[in-house]
Amino acid sequence: MQNTRDLKLKSNRGFSLIEIMIVLIIIGGLMAVIIPKVQDGREQSNVKNTKMRLSEISTKVNEYYAECGKYPAAITFLTDDDAGCKNWTGNPKLKSLLKDAWNGDIQYSVSGSGYNLKSQGKDKKEGGSSFDKDIYSDESVSGEE
Image 1: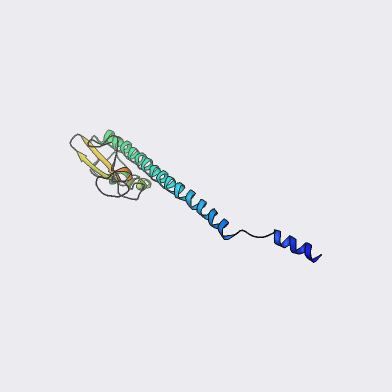
Image 2: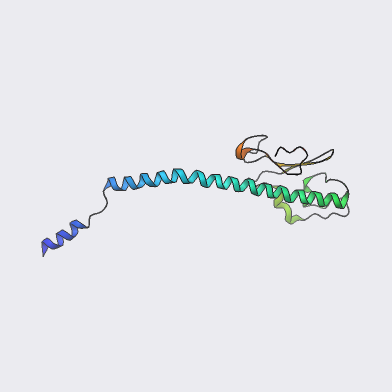
């Protein structure tokens, strides 16, 4: 009876250190491949989100132009009433449009024949490449995209 119980205990042994290390190496390798893909996907999503915000602002700029006959002087026309145009009423709920997906300020300026609207991208600096590249509205007069 004692021998039968000892045999059962010996057959229920755990994993060896080598087996555990092999599993950890496999998991580590998978994570090394998966994590960069997830991060790239997040950044691509931020770029698309910022482009959508720029498009929404462009629509509002064009509405302002149709109502007032001129381009707004500052991007704050979205949230504040403009004394220079009695037909325009700002909407404080649009405050979220003033920031890009990386929480940087959306830049707006008026030029002679139109306006420029851009985000400085992930790095919040002029220029850049990949996800750090500046993102321009499709309707910006000096846009690079």
